[in-house]
Image 1: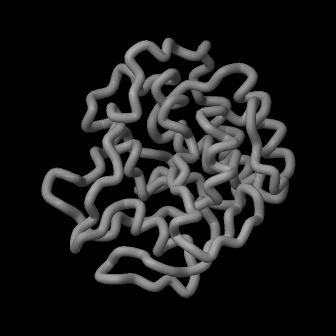
Image 2: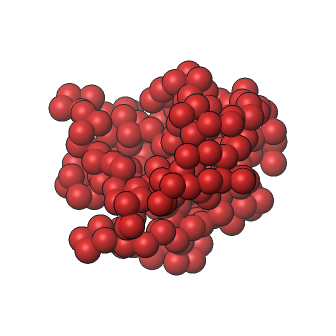
Image 3: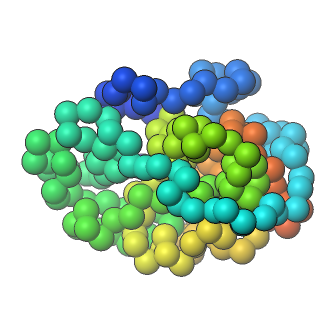
Length: 210
């Protein structure tokens, strides 16, 4: 299933709506349409290039997640429902289904084997601009269901990736490089995060697979 499809938040809780930022040239979702590599390349050229910021003060706790999406659901359940097939729920908690990890091609048959990956890792966001944000804004970023920022993948691929950018880690499924690069750029473009020179070069190379 495409991770580039813009999706609406499943339900809402008072005080939990995403904070709107500057209007995006790609519509209300702020997402570059899937398959539009030229648009992604243009967006990439407009991203600020900067050296990685300091990790001083970083903690995942400064990006609160997973946020409630109502009726005893949270963002993790919402992504599991969206990305899975034959999904079964108890209440609205996902208890069974099948997921294909786009990073490594593995088929997963239990939600316990699935990680919800932040396409742009929280630590990468911290060192590319998020360190100056409020905690509320960092929480909006960490729970962003409207951009292609959250995707259900295998635990092993998520842990292999860690907080590395595309110059350091790429999906082993090369067929996913085009979409992965577009998704990464979409997120950084919307949230106004910087890229390093090496990161931009790697993303440019990945877009050439489109």
